[in-house]
Amino acid sequence: MDHTSPAVSGEHSPRSAPAQQGILECPGDWPLHHRGTLRNARIAWRRIGPTNAPWVCALGGIWCDRNLDDQPGRRGSWAQLVGPGGALDPERVCILSFDYLGGAGDSSGPQHDQPFPSVSTYDQAEALARLLDALGVPALRALVGGSYGGMVALAFAERYPERVSAVCTVSAADRAHPMAIAWHSIQRHIVRFALERGSPEQGLRLARAVGLALYRSPEEFAARFCSVPQTEHGNRFVFPVEKYLFADDATPSEHLRAEAFLCLSESLDLHQLDATRICVQTTAVAAREDQLVPLADVRALVARMPNAQLREISSIHGHDAYLREAAQLREIIAEVLAAAA
Image (cartoon, rainbow, N blue to C red; front, side, top):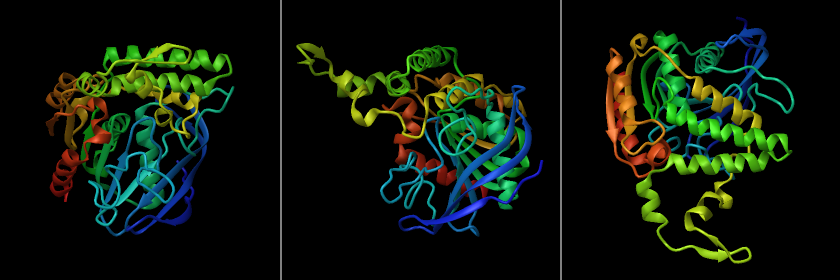
């Protein structure tokens, strides 16, 4: 496949080396894993840290875009992990991320009332491989992925084992659990229903509320929301947990359109790979309280992989442990990077 040189722009992140970002244009037809085709695809990318340091790719969940770290006037989508002093520190490594195909940001994705093909985690892995080619990076020191990003990391390790020394996944398995697919299906029906009625923002808001109820653990909700409901809105009872789910700061990412949510949610549920083919050194982190990616599924994944270890953690944040457990993950990721050196 032909690759054009990525368009580059510079910026400065606090206390770190200058960042760069750009758009990789991929002219022609791109045959996708589920038999669709992308024409003249675009991959939006961003890197922070010195290019002469070891390269690490960091990939978050479907609500994340390439801006993982905090920037002036903007909160990063994975800032507890990526940034100065974090588990992935741009003063120590060069951190690469990109906008998912079909998702948030500036990579190729679905537009309103226009068909867009189904996207696989294998397609996201190929996007990363194309990006590394364009940037002149032979191989990554490590690939760290949380939730959907962990699925993409596993797909990349299976397809391109020579291009990454170590993989660390958090809250991810080799396939989606049927119960998770059930809840994701409900979310997609909500969003489609809202789209048909011209209310995509409200559909995303409802889908996000369902997600928040599943991403966290029953233990956290019991500790935080045990107070009695209050009467509001014309004497209607409003429960504390209800206010949390629909609070202003619980609204979806401003970058994720309804069509993009549908595409990536489907991609997450279609994810399925052969764990026995992944020979890259892999550390799979699982939270015991995760309702969406059960610990048993991650144990089974590691058991099928020839060169993997399981790291169990406890987190009342459940599936969101990959976003919230910075202290626990910092130690684990440091070990991964050291072992891959």
